[in-house]
Length: 115
Length: 115
Image (cartoon, rainbow over all chains, first blue to last red; front, side, top):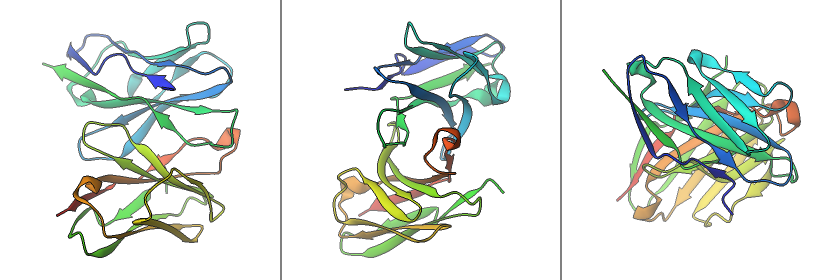
């Protein structure tokens, strides 16, 4: 069963426009949620994470995400994007019901920022 | 130092060759991971080492053999690979596998091509 669903495979957006990348997870137990960014031919870099506490999480590079337990969502947002934000973005989850404390990734969303 | 270093960056090998991928971190992390990432796909977990012991093997074929010689090093030995094994191999590390140590740091990856 898919644990993490990223509904949009590609999101084109103009520079300085706001953007939202969607992520939904499926789990009957507590989860930790993450957003990672991958630039071309690079490894992954953590943008932000939700472990507990405040549902609004702020990350690096002006990104933020909101954990919504009722909608099982963890959407990533940025109020104004730059050309340099063009990259692949992965939502990931760690389920807390097992000893498998490793990341499971969604399929990814390609953010393409156009001038 | 928040770096995970992977060598080599690129590797081309024949199907009868034996080669090794190396990963090193000096952050004192006690969990280390190997992920495989095919083009335009998310990373898929292969192995997890926790305190130098193999804790997760995601049913990876035996032509991939991991090794953790000490807490800073992680190797992936390759033998008799197939062309479909061509991918980006990512190493990651985290403090451990407890709740407060979930942030995984990724290396830049080794781009492997099997000919």
